[in-house]
Image 1 (tube, helix red, strand yellow):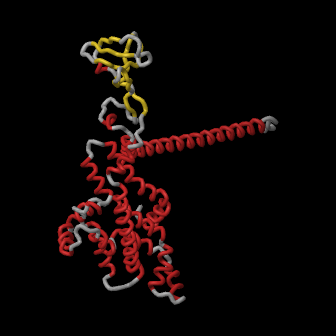
Image 2 (cartoon, helix red, strand yellow; image 1 turned 180 degrees about the vertical axis):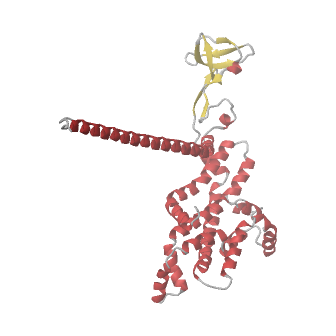
Image 3 (cartoon, helix red, strand yellow; image 1 turned 135 degrees about the horizontal axis):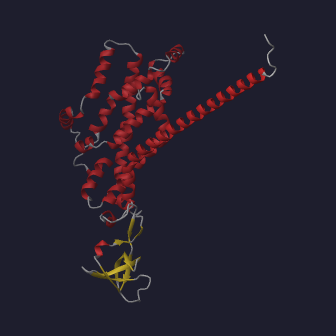
Length: 374
Protein backbone atom coordinates (compact mmCIF):
# COMPACT_ATOMS: atom_id res chain seq x y z
CA UNK A 1 0.00 0.00 0.00
CA UNK A 2 1.20 3.49 -0.75
CA UNK A 3 1.55 6.28 1.77
CA UNK A 4 -1.39 8.71 2.02
CA UNK A 5 -0.93 12.00 0.39
CA UNK A 6 0.05 14.66 2.96
CA UNK A 7 -2.68 17.05 1.76
CA UNK A 8 -5.60 14.62 2.13
CA UNK A 9 -6.39 15.52 5.76
CA UNK A 10 -6.59 19.17 4.75
CA UNK A 11 -9.27 18.40 2.20
CA UNK A 12 -11.21 16.42 4.83
CA UNK A 13 -11.05 19.24 7.35
CA UNK A 14 -12.20 21.75 4.75
CA UNK A 15 -15.20 19.60 3.89
CA UNK A 16 -16.13 19.24 7.55
CA UNK A 17 -15.81 22.98 8.09
CA UNK A 18 -17.88 23.72 5.00
CA UNK A 19 -20.57 21.28 6.13
CA UNK A 20 -20.60 22.86 9.62
CA UNK A 21 -20.93 26.34 8.10
CA UNK A 22 -23.75 25.14 5.88
CA UNK A 23 -25.54 23.61 8.87
CA UNK A 24 -25.06 26.80 10.87
CA UNK A 25 -26.55 28.86 8.02
CA UNK A 26 -29.50 26.47 7.84
CA UNK A 27 -30.07 26.80 11.59
CA UNK A 28 -29.92 30.59 11.40
CA UNK A 29 -32.31 30.57 8.43
CA UNK A 30 -34.72 28.31 10.30
CA UNK A 31 -34.57 30.59 13.32
CA UNK A 32 -35.23 33.65 11.16
CA UNK A 33 -38.16 31.89 9.51
CA UNK A 34 -39.54 30.89 12.92
CA UNK A 35 -39.20 34.46 14.19
CA UNK A 36 -40.84 35.79 11.02
CA UNK A 37 -43.75 33.34 11.29
CA UNK A 38 -44.19 34.19 14.96
CA UNK A 39 -44.18 37.92 14.15
CA UNK A 40 -46.73 37.44 11.36
CA UNK A 41 -49.00 35.44 13.67
CA UNK A 42 -48.73 38.10 16.38
CA UNK A 43 -49.49 40.89 13.89
CA UNK A 44 -52.51 39.00 12.53
CA UNK A 45 -53.84 38.22 16.00
CA UNK A 46 -53.35 41.83 17.09
CA UNK A 47 -55.09 43.08 13.94
CA UNK A 48 -58.06 40.77 14.50
CA UNK A 49 -58.27 41.86 18.16
CA UNK A 50 -58.17 45.53 17.12
CA UNK A 51 -60.93 44.99 14.55
CA UNK A 52 -63.13 43.24 17.11
CA UNK A 53 -62.38 45.99 19.65
CA UNK A 54 -63.33 48.68 17.13
CA UNK A 55 -66.58 46.87 16.35
CA UNK A 56 -67.45 46.83 20.05
CA UNK A 57 -66.48 50.48 20.49
CA UNK A 58 -68.37 51.77 17.44
CA UNK A 59 -71.69 52.23 19.30
CA UNK A 60 -69.89 54.09 22.09
CA UNK A 61 -68.08 56.27 19.57
CA UNK A 62 -71.36 57.01 17.81
CA UNK A 63 -72.96 58.05 21.11
CA UNK A 64 -70.07 60.34 22.02
CA UNK A 65 -69.98 62.01 18.59
CA UNK A 66 -73.76 62.42 18.44
CA UNK A 67 -73.87 63.90 21.94
CA UNK A 68 -71.63 66.75 20.72
CA UNK A 69 -73.69 67.57 17.62
CA UNK A 70 -76.36 70.16 17.10
CA UNK A 71 -79.95 69.19 16.38
CA UNK A 72 -79.61 70.58 12.86
CA UNK A 73 -76.57 68.40 12.10
CA UNK A 74 -78.28 65.26 13.41
CA UNK A 75 -81.13 65.86 10.97
CA UNK A 76 -78.82 66.87 8.09
CA UNK A 77 -78.17 63.90 5.78
CA UNK A 78 -75.24 65.70 4.13
CA UNK A 79 -73.47 66.50 7.40
CA UNK A 80 -70.03 64.99 8.07
CA UNK A 81 -69.41 62.40 10.78
CA UNK A 82 -67.71 64.70 13.26
CA UNK A 83 -69.57 67.52 15.07
CA UNK A 84 -69.88 70.46 12.72
CA UNK A 85 -72.32 73.03 11.41
CA UNK A 86 -72.98 74.71 8.10
CA UNK A 87 -71.01 77.85 7.38
CA UNK A 88 -73.33 80.82 6.93
CA UNK A 89 -72.76 84.32 5.63
CA UNK A 90 -74.77 87.39 6.59
CA UNK A 91 -75.88 89.37 3.57
CA UNK A 92 -78.35 92.27 3.67
CA UNK A 93 -79.48 91.33 7.17
CA UNK A 94 -80.07 87.62 6.49
CA UNK A 95 -77.94 84.50 6.90
CA UNK A 96 -77.28 82.32 3.86
CA UNK A 97 -75.61 78.92 3.54
CA UNK A 98 -72.16 78.82 1.94
CA UNK A 99 -71.90 76.21 -0.83
CA UNK A 100 -69.06 74.65 -2.85
CA UNK A 101 -69.71 75.94 -6.39
CA UNK A 102 -67.76 74.87 -9.50
CA UNK A 103 -66.95 77.97 -11.54
CA UNK A 104 -64.43 78.13 -14.41
CA UNK A 105 -62.91 74.79 -13.51
CA UNK A 106 -62.36 75.56 -9.83
CA UNK A 107 -64.35 75.15 -6.63
CA UNK A 108 -65.34 78.34 -4.84
CA UNK A 109 -67.11 78.89 -1.52
CA UNK A 110 -70.09 81.13 -2.28
CA UNK A 111 -73.19 82.14 -0.33
CA UNK A 112 -76.46 81.02 -1.90
CA UNK A 113 -78.74 84.09 -1.76
CA UNK A 114 -81.42 83.14 -4.32
CA UNK A 115 -82.39 79.65 -5.32
CA UNK A 116 -83.76 78.71 -8.71
CA UNK A 117 -84.53 75.61 -10.69
CA UNK A 118 -82.19 76.25 -13.59
CA UNK A 119 -80.02 79.04 -12.19
CA UNK A 120 -79.17 80.41 -8.75
CA UNK A 121 -77.58 83.57 -7.44
CA UNK A 122 -74.50 83.58 -5.24
CA UNK A 123 -72.41 86.14 -3.38
CA UNK A 124 -68.70 85.86 -2.68
CA UNK A 125 -68.22 86.11 1.13
CA UNK A 126 -64.67 87.33 0.55
CA UNK A 127 -65.96 90.27 -1.52
CA UNK A 128 -69.64 90.90 -0.73
CA UNK A 129 -69.59 94.32 -2.41
CA UNK A 130 -68.83 92.74 -5.79
CA UNK A 131 -71.55 91.89 -8.27
CA UNK A 132 -73.74 88.89 -7.63
CA UNK A 133 -72.76 85.70 -9.41
CA UNK A 134 -75.26 83.82 -11.56
CA UNK A 135 -74.65 80.08 -11.70
CA UNK A 136 -76.55 77.77 -13.99
CA UNK A 137 -77.37 74.37 -12.56
CA UNK A 138 -79.37 72.65 -9.84
CA UNK A 139 -78.34 74.09 -6.50
CA UNK A 140 -79.43 70.90 -4.69
CA UNK A 141 -76.46 69.09 -6.22
CA UNK A 142 -74.04 71.43 -4.46
CA UNK A 143 -72.38 70.45 -1.19
CA UNK A 144 -72.58 72.82 1.79
CA UNK A 145 -69.46 74.04 3.53
CA UNK A 146 -69.08 72.87 7.13
CA UNK A 147 -66.93 74.01 10.03
CA UNK A 148 -66.13 72.30 13.32
CA UNK A 149 -68.80 72.98 15.91
CA UNK A 150 -68.62 70.97 19.14
CA UNK A 151 -71.71 71.51 21.31
CA UNK A 152 -70.47 70.94 24.88
CA UNK A 153 -73.61 72.66 26.10
CA UNK A 154 -75.61 69.52 25.28
CA UNK A 155 -74.41 67.94 28.52
CA UNK A 156 -75.61 70.66 30.94
CA UNK A 157 -78.87 70.87 28.98
CA UNK A 158 -79.44 67.14 29.31
CA UNK A 159 -78.44 67.33 32.99
CA UNK A 160 -81.19 69.90 33.62
CA UNK A 161 -83.88 68.36 31.42
CA UNK A 162 -83.53 64.84 32.83
CA UNK A 163 -83.16 66.06 36.44
CA UNK A 164 -79.97 64.03 36.54
CA UNK A 165 -79.03 64.95 40.11
CA UNK A 166 -82.18 63.39 41.57
CA UNK A 167 -81.94 60.30 39.35
CA UNK A 168 -78.29 59.87 40.31
CA UNK A 169 -79.09 60.14 44.01
CA UNK A 170 -81.86 57.53 43.72
CA UNK A 171 -79.69 55.16 41.69
CA UNK A 172 -76.71 55.41 44.03
CA UNK A 173 -78.89 54.79 47.06
CA UNK A 174 -80.50 51.76 45.43
CA UNK A 175 -77.21 50.34 44.12
CA UNK A 176 -75.16 50.88 47.30
CA UNK A 177 -77.77 49.54 49.75
CA UNK A 178 -78.59 46.46 47.68
CA UNK A 179 -74.89 45.78 46.99
CA UNK A 180 -74.08 45.76 50.69
CA UNK A 181 -77.12 43.59 51.45
CA UNK A 182 -76.53 41.13 48.61
CA UNK A 183 -72.80 40.74 49.27
CA UNK A 184 -73.09 40.31 53.04
CA UNK A 185 -75.99 37.83 52.87
CA UNK A 186 -74.27 35.84 50.11
CA UNK A 187 -71.04 35.69 52.12
CA UNK A 188 -72.86 34.27 55.16
CA UNK A 189 -74.70 31.61 53.16
CA UNK A 190 -71.58 30.72 51.14
CA UNK A 191 -69.54 30.29 54.34
CA UNK A 192 -72.15 27.90 55.68
CA UNK A 193 -72.08 25.77 52.53
CA UNK A 194 -68.28 25.85 52.32
CA UNK A 195 -67.37 24.98 55.93
CA UNK A 196 -70.27 23.54 57.92
CA UNK A 197 -71.77 20.08 57.79
CA UNK A 198 -75.53 19.67 58.09
CA UNK A 199 -78.17 17.26 56.76
CA UNK A 200 -79.05 17.50 53.05
CA UNK A 201 -76.28 20.03 52.48
CA UNK A 202 -75.67 18.91 48.88
CA UNK A 203 -79.36 18.78 48.05
CA UNK A 204 -79.99 22.25 49.45
CA UNK A 205 -77.02 23.68 47.57
CA UNK A 206 -78.20 22.17 44.28
CA UNK A 207 -81.69 23.48 44.96
CA UNK A 208 -80.26 26.94 45.54
CA UNK A 209 -78.16 26.82 42.37
CA UNK A 210 -81.14 25.59 40.34
CA UNK A 211 -82.89 28.91 41.01
CA UNK A 212 -80.39 30.55 38.64
CA UNK A 213 -82.20 29.04 35.65
CA UNK A 214 -85.61 30.13 36.94
CA UNK A 215 -86.82 33.06 34.79
CA UNK A 216 -87.74 36.15 36.82
CA UNK A 217 -90.92 36.47 34.76
CA UNK A 218 -92.16 33.18 36.24
CA UNK A 219 -92.30 34.66 39.75
CA UNK A 220 -93.21 38.23 38.80
CA UNK A 221 -96.97 37.99 39.31
CA UNK A 222 -96.91 36.21 42.70
CA UNK A 223 -94.17 38.50 43.95
CA UNK A 224 -96.07 41.58 42.88
CA UNK A 225 -99.23 40.26 44.55
CA UNK A 226 -97.39 39.67 47.84
CA UNK A 227 -95.73 43.09 47.81
CA UNK A 228 -99.02 44.74 46.90
CA UNK A 229 -100.76 43.13 49.88
CA UNK A 230 -97.93 44.31 52.11
CA UNK A 231 -98.37 47.86 50.80
CA UNK A 232 -94.83 48.04 49.46
CA UNK A 233 -95.68 48.90 45.83
CA UNK A 234 -94.58 52.44 45.10
CA UNK A 235 -91.61 52.22 47.50
CA UNK A 236 -88.06 50.90 47.40
CA UNK A 237 -88.89 47.97 49.71
CA UNK A 238 -89.71 45.36 46.99
CA UNK A 239 -86.32 46.09 45.40
CA UNK A 240 -84.20 46.27 48.57
CA UNK A 241 -85.62 43.70 51.03
CA UNK A 242 -85.16 40.60 48.76
CA UNK A 243 -81.43 41.32 48.46
CA UNK A 244 -81.03 40.59 52.19
CA UNK A 245 -81.92 36.95 51.46
CA UNK A 246 -78.93 36.17 49.26
CA UNK A 247 -78.60 35.28 45.61
CA UNK A 248 -77.66 31.89 44.14
CA UNK A 249 -75.09 33.31 41.72
CA UNK A 250 -73.30 35.32 44.41
CA UNK A 251 -73.38 32.36 46.81
CA UNK A 252 -71.79 30.12 44.19
CA UNK A 253 -68.96 32.59 43.51
CA UNK A 254 -68.13 33.13 47.17
CA UNK A 255 -68.42 29.44 48.07
CA UNK A 256 -65.92 28.57 45.33
CA UNK A 257 -63.52 31.13 46.75
CA UNK A 258 -63.99 30.07 50.37
CA UNK A 259 -63.11 26.49 49.41
CA UNK A 260 -59.66 27.69 48.28
CA UNK A 261 -58.86 29.20 51.71
CA UNK A 262 -56.75 26.74 53.78
CA UNK A 263 -58.64 25.24 56.72
CA UNK A 264 -55.46 25.54 58.82
CA UNK A 265 -56.20 29.24 59.24
CA UNK A 266 -59.58 28.47 60.82
CA UNK A 267 -58.09 25.73 62.98
CA UNK A 268 -55.48 28.16 64.29
CA UNK A 269 -58.25 30.66 65.05
CA UNK A 270 -60.23 28.01 66.93
CA UNK A 271 -57.13 27.13 68.96
CA UNK A 272 -56.92 30.78 69.96
CA UNK A 273 -60.53 30.60 71.16
CA UNK A 274 -62.32 32.19 68.18
CA UNK A 275 -65.85 31.02 67.48
CA UNK A 276 -67.43 30.57 64.04
CA UNK A 277 -68.58 34.18 63.80
CA UNK A 278 -65.20 35.59 64.88
CA UNK A 279 -63.43 33.23 62.48
CA UNK A 280 -65.69 34.31 59.65
CA UNK A 281 -65.19 38.01 60.32
CA UNK A 282 -61.47 37.98 61.22
CA UNK A 283 -60.11 35.16 59.04
CA UNK A 284 -62.38 34.36 56.09
CA UNK A 285 -63.53 37.82 55.01
CA UNK A 286 -60.03 39.42 54.95
CA UNK A 287 -58.81 36.53 52.80
CA UNK A 288 -61.77 36.84 50.42
CA UNK A 289 -61.47 40.53 49.54
CA UNK A 290 -60.98 39.93 45.76
CA UNK A 291 -64.06 37.68 45.59
CA UNK A 292 -66.12 40.12 47.66
CA UNK A 293 -65.13 42.97 45.35
CA UNK A 294 -66.03 40.91 42.29
CA UNK A 295 -69.44 40.02 43.70
CA UNK A 296 -70.02 43.61 44.79
CA UNK A 297 -69.22 44.92 41.33
CA UNK A 298 -71.45 42.33 39.70
CA UNK A 299 -74.40 43.38 41.81
CA UNK A 300 -73.63 47.10 41.66
CA UNK A 301 -73.66 47.05 37.86
CA UNK A 302 -76.85 44.96 37.90
CA UNK A 303 -78.56 47.44 40.23
CA UNK A 304 -77.27 50.40 38.23
CA UNK A 305 -78.74 49.00 35.00
CA UNK A 306 -81.87 47.47 36.58
CA UNK A 307 -84.85 48.63 34.57
CA UNK A 308 -87.67 46.11 34.86
CA UNK A 309 -87.92 46.02 38.66
CA UNK A 310 -88.07 49.81 39.21
CA UNK A 311 -90.41 50.17 36.24
CA UNK A 312 -92.90 47.74 37.83
CA UNK A 313 -92.68 48.62 41.52
CA UNK A 314 -92.00 52.38 41.29
CA UNK A 315 -94.72 53.21 38.77
CA UNK A 316 -96.35 56.45 39.82
CA UNK A 317 -93.50 57.44 42.16
CA UNK A 318 -91.62 59.94 40.03
CA UNK A 319 -89.35 61.08 42.88
CA UNK A 320 -87.96 57.54 43.36
CA UNK A 321 -87.10 56.61 39.78
CA UNK A 322 -83.50 55.51 39.05
CA UNK A 323 -81.45 56.52 36.03
CA UNK A 324 -82.51 53.56 33.88
CA UNK A 325 -86.22 54.38 34.07
CA UNK A 326 -85.63 58.14 34.03
CA UNK A 327 -83.56 57.84 30.85
CA UNK A 328 -86.31 55.75 29.26
CA UNK A 329 -88.91 58.41 30.05
CA UNK A 330 -86.56 61.13 28.82
CA UNK A 331 -86.13 59.22 25.56
CA UNK A 332 -89.87 59.16 25.06
CA UNK A 333 -90.38 62.85 25.87
CA UNK A 334 -87.42 64.19 23.85
CA UNK A 335 -87.27 61.75 20.95
CA UNK A 336 -86.74 64.72 18.62
CA UNK A 337 -83.55 65.64 20.52
CA UNK A 338 -81.24 62.64 19.89
CA UNK A 339 -78.14 64.65 20.81
CA UNK A 340 -79.53 65.23 24.32
CA UNK A 341 -80.49 61.56 24.67
CA UNK A 342 -76.96 60.48 23.78
CA UNK A 343 -75.47 63.06 26.16
CA UNK A 344 -77.62 61.73 29.00
CA UNK A 345 -76.58 58.16 28.12
CA UNK A 346 -72.89 59.08 28.23
CA UNK A 347 -73.30 60.72 31.64
CA UNK A 348 -75.08 57.58 32.87
CA UNK A 349 -72.10 55.44 31.85
CA UNK A 350 -69.42 57.53 33.55
CA UNK A 351 -69.79 56.24 37.12
CA UNK A 352 -69.82 52.49 36.28
CA UNK A 353 -66.86 52.90 33.94
CA UNK A 354 -64.91 54.84 36.57
CA UNK A 355 -65.61 52.25 39.27
CA UNK A 356 -64.63 49.37 37.01
CA UNK A 357 -61.45 51.16 35.89
CA UNK A 358 -60.14 51.55 39.44
CA UNK A 359 -61.35 48.14 40.68
CA UNK A 360 -60.58 46.00 37.63
CA UNK A 361 -57.50 44.39 39.18
CA UNK A 362 -59.43 43.03 42.16
CA UNK A 363 -62.38 42.21 39.91
CA UNK A 364 -60.34 40.07 37.52
CA UNK A 365 -58.49 38.41 40.38
CA UNK A 366 -61.74 37.46 42.07
CA UNK A 367 -63.29 36.20 38.84
CA UNK A 368 -60.28 34.02 37.98
CA UNK A 369 -59.90 32.49 41.44
CA UNK A 370 -63.60 31.70 41.81
CA UNK A 371 -63.45 29.84 38.52
CA UNK A 372 -65.94 31.89 36.55
CA UNK A 373 -63.64 32.00 33.52
CA UNK A 374 -63.57 28.19 33.50
